[in-house]
Image 1 (tube, helix red, strand yellow):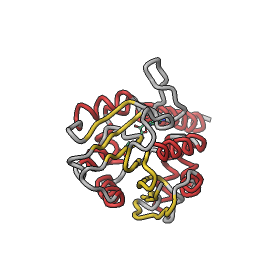
Image 2: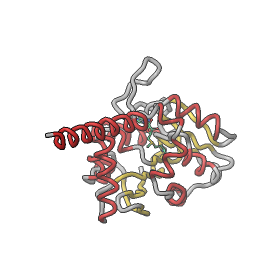
Image 3: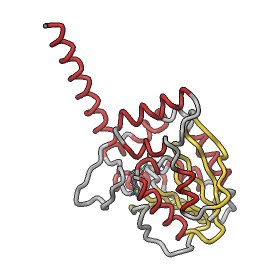
Length: 242
Ligand SMILES: C[S@@+](CC[C@H](N)C(=O)[O-])C[C@H]1O[C@@H](n2cnc3c(N)ncnc32)[C@H](O)[C@@H]1O
């Protein structure tokens, strides 16, 4: 009996530790200053994000950003939109290729945007607090659009709404590049992807791991969809044309 109590106590403690860590890293908060979305918005995590994200990506973040930049096929004056930009790590990297253009990162989290502005804003790199599913921009006002590790933060309906918004604001024939979770193709990819799903208890991650992205991209009217790079056994970089 004491052994049984001890095991139950241990399991309980582990479960509460997992909840505390999850809340600290990935907490969905809805306060009055939050834009209203069903997406998983990272607020407190913003302060640790620049340390956490590279580690959680096993330091493949830069390689992924480079692959995205190549896939965007940018010219120096291009205007590019990055949705769910977080602290702007990838937005900043893309902006280096468009010195006379503009990379604009949007995120629903005011904390993420404050940090991005403080650390990464420049002549050709800007940030705005906005929702990916209702972008405050005119139609056909960007040459290309991109997002990295954003789509597993929104459910199927919102994923499609965000893709439709990207299509609306990009000029016809413009490029789209998306990096995100896909159906795993290795044991490590399965381990990495599904442990993220279990740890964060985020059904939106499972949708990605079940391979929803290519069909949603097609449904949103993206053509010539090609996977141009892959990472960690479950992350793909897709490019396509609007
Ligand atoms: C995992 S982070 C990715 C950040 C960045 N793109 C990167 O690769 O480092 C996903 C971001 O999406 C944001 N997000 C969630 N729902 C959103 C929405 N509906 N509109 C805009 N951003 C949203 C979160 O606040 C978070 O910063």
